[in-house]
Length: 217
Length: 399
Image (cartoon, rainbow over all chains, first blue to last red; front, top):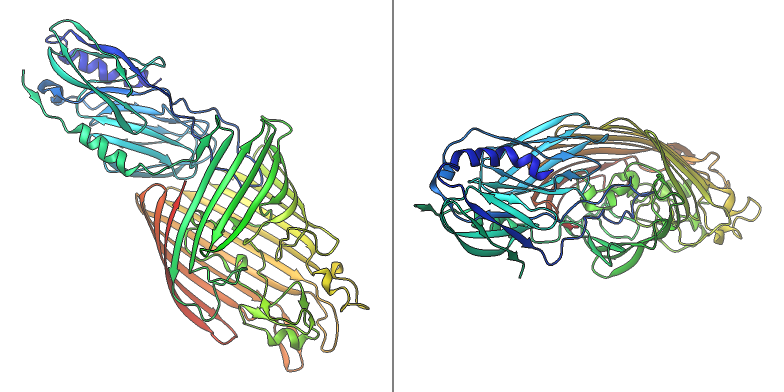
């Protein structure tokens, strides 16, 4: 889901840089242990349990280049991405986008939600809105935007905002692929649940794929 | 090829540090044990009129609380829940302790047994700082009336003499010591019994049979008869809820049986309450309101007697507006009105009518740390202190 949402951004990056940089970096980000599913607070003040919900999938990480080649920062058309609110979860749990991307937050539940973030990269509060409605936020600074629901304290997610297109959400087995990276030496960062976990250096030869696994220390 | 130094890493790390305190419950044992917590410090003006004193005889505007709640998931059908609290820095209590049974794991139907949360009313969660849009609680859920469960007035004049105390009262029948009165709905401790809860479509219902009363929740039975309470909430639309609550049960302690010989037993005197409430929210607004009426029947002893149950009406209205991310403004106005009682000196309300207006501004640096500053105006038609303006600040951390 996360990959599908981000794919327009990556496709654009590929089209822009493909003529000069057909190679890339790929490998696995090996997490020692995935975070536990987020739980509701103990409901000691409630007369009963909340509605059953599926656990949040927290097995995906993000791999990105710490530094990027100059063409990566060229002006490009604004993109759009979506983070759904479904069954009291944000879907996807991790959403990487480029600066300038407008992220939609549709409410697919029957109850109200109130999406907000107090992160320095983007502070916003969309207020309460009902099922079938959607509100949007333009991500205009790079950084991590931690997203919450003011009504349901167990709902949280991450939007990672990058100034360049060289990032990828890992597959469930940790595989990632940074396509169209021009030749050069780069620092590759593996990020998981709120912080960079590992950084490795890799050299990409022109027109080739560099293999790089990122084992979490 | 020229490389441009990119500062994303710094931005990522900086934000991560700001969010490093736990922002969600701690889960161990593969989700079998879940821990939440609330920690707050409140410091405010002295309250010589006892407008904000609660059941534990402490000023709610001067409090330090550390509370840890736990949910133990024994199976999909059985959970044990509890909350331990340290209040005012030295008073430890098991606030909640109950077992939740879910006969059908996928259906919203629960049976809770033990020291269970309140069934009646829409504002019971204001005892939790992170659920309270201001700092003080609504008067109906905190303000101490002159009534006591272990001591009763012998005449209407005994009752009228205690008007407007807001704290300690004393009556000639039963326990002669001065002690704190009772609020209409006591949220300072949970009642003990069985609670059944279900959701059918847009309607949520709760019923409970417990040992104590609304005003006086108990760990064990103290009069031989239970209280029955119920609540129905209709989620008419997203963001629009209507609720109806009711409760009835004996409220006097059986230690009064002997003094009341000839007029009945303690269990014959009941507290009966009904309430209706509404909550509406949209965009940056949340608004709530509740009207409730409670009556307490009292023994008719000497003249002038208290012939009818004494009544209290409560009206609460509150609203919160989100000014900007992490900053909100909230106001609450509420009042208690009491029925008339005829004493030797004439007719007057059995308690002094009391009102409160409170405004608070809340700022959050991160999601689960908030600072509140509140201004509160209280007024009362009786007692030593007729009106008072108080201010308070509160720092809250929860996960």
